[in-house]
Image 1 (cartoon, rainbow, N blue to C red):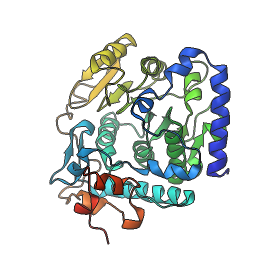
Image 2 (image 1 turned 90 degrees about the vertical axis):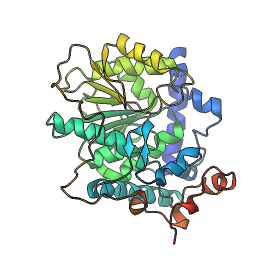
Image 3 (image 1 turned 120 degrees about the vertical axis):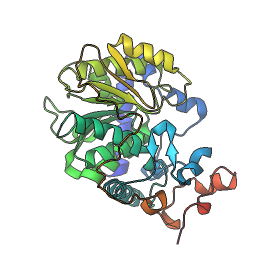
Image 4 (image 1 turned 30 degrees about the vertical axis):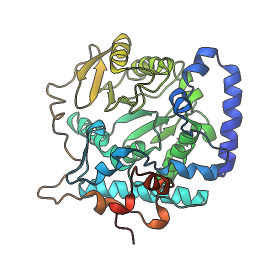
Length: 356
C-alpha cells in the first residue's frame, strides 16, 4: 500500500497528464470554480495537511447543532439519534482518528459528520420501502466522505468522486480506514475492466468523465449535495446526463439533494430545468429535492415520509441520544479551525462541548 505522500504524488502526476489530454470544456467543467472564487483551500502540497478536511466549523450556524431538539433545515437533519445511528457515527469518527493519526495529528469530526444523518435517513428509508437489501449510491462532490462512509458501513455500495484534490484524497483514505480491502481507489488500484464488485469505489474526476463511455457501474441514487449550485454548469450538466445513463437498470432511478449549496454558478430554477432536460421529473420539492427518470414507475406513496423523515433503525420506546452524547472529541483531537473561529466570534466550541 503506498504512503499518503506517494498517493498525493500519484494524484498530482496523473491529474497533470489528464488535463493535457482533455478538451477545454472538460477541464473547465471540473475546475473547482466556487472554491477558487471564495479562496477555499481545496488542494494540498503535503499529505499531512489533509487533516484540515476532517471538519470545518467556520460558519455562524455551528452553534445551532447544540440547540435543544436541534434541526438543520438544509440537511433535513434532526440531531437526535438512535443507538444504531450513534454507533455508525462513532465508527466514522474512529476511522477519521485513524486516518489523521497516520497523517501526523489525530483529529476527530465535531459537526460535519452529524450533518450527514438527514440524507442518510432519506436514502435508508427509500431502501426499506423498496425492499432492497442494499442500494448503490453515487456521491458526487462527496466532501470529507462522511455520507459515503455512513452508507457503506450500513451495508450499501457507494461510488465517490470529487473534483477538489484535497477532498478526493481525504475521502478515499477515510473510506479505506472504514472498509479496508472493500474499497477500490481508481487512482491507486486502477479502473475495473468490467466488473464493479467492491462495496466502495473512489473515482478521480478524470475517470468520472470517462464513465459516459464503455462499461460502468449501475446506480440507484445519484446524490449531489451542497454543490449543484457551486459546480461549473458543465459539470452539473454532465452529472445529470451521466445519472440517466447509469440508472438504466435500477429499480429506483433517483436523483437527490437536500441543499443546492451556495448558488454562485446556478440557481434552483436552472438546476431544475437541467434535470428535466436530462430526462428527470421532480417528485419532491421540499424539504428535499428528489427526481426520478421520466416514465419510471415507483410505488404509490413511496415518498410520503418527506414531511417527517424516520430515524434509521429506531427501536420501540428507545431513548434518543443528543449531540453531546454522540460526540467523541477531546481538546487534543478538535478540528484545526476552532481556535480561529472562536477568536473571531463565529463559534466557540468550549461553550457547547464538555471537554475533559
